[in-house]
Image 1 (tube, rainbow, N blue to C red):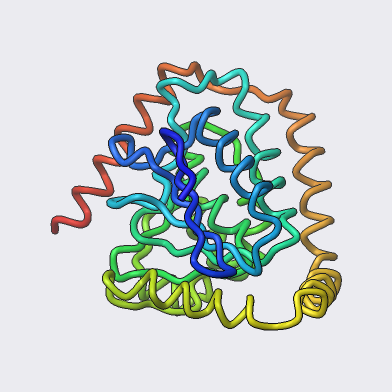
Image 2: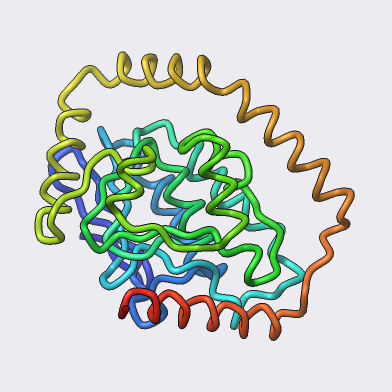
Length: 252
C-alpha cells in the first residue's frame, strides 16, 4: 500500500483502490486533496480498473471552502476533468455523503455503487458558487427534470432515490460496499484491456454529444458571469449551514 496524509492507494490484484482520507473534514475537497487524487489516478493507469471511495463517514462532502480561496474555485472543474479522462475504468464506491464537488467527483466515475448510507446533493446554489461539471454531467446521468430538481432545490437524496433515478447502479449494505465494488472491478480487470478500452471509448463517443455541447455552454456562461462569487468566508458559512441542514433532515 502506498499512502500519504490525505490519499491512500491500495492494490487488490489488478484493481487499484483510491481512498480520499480526510475523515476529520468529511473528505471535503481542497487543493491538496484534489492534486493528490489526480496524482493517484494518473499513477494507477497500469491497473485493470480503479475504485474510488472515501474514508468513513463520507465519500466527499463538497469543497473545503475554509481553506480554498473563492477566487480560485473556477479552477476545480479541471481536477474533475482530469479524473474523468482516466484511460482506466473507474467505479465510485459511495459510502456516505457526496455533495457538490463530491457529487462532481462521483459523476466523473464510469458508474457508482452505494451503501445505504450514500446521499447526494448539489448545493452550489446554497453556498453561492456557480456549478462546474455537475451542470452538464448530472442531466446526462439522471435526466433533465430530476437534475433540475436537485440543482434548484439543493436538497439531499438518499441511496434508494439515487438508485431509482439512475445515479447509482446498486445499493448494498455498508459492510458489503467494498466487496461488491471490488468484485465488479475484478470483472472489468479480468477482460482484455485493449478491448475494454475500445468499448469504453465507443460508449463515450456515442453518448458524448450532449455533454460536449453542455461543456461549451458552461464555458460561455462562466465567461458571461465573469466568475462573480461571494466571499470565501460567506461561502464557508453557507457550507456549514448546508451540512447542518442535512444532519437535521436525517435525524427526523
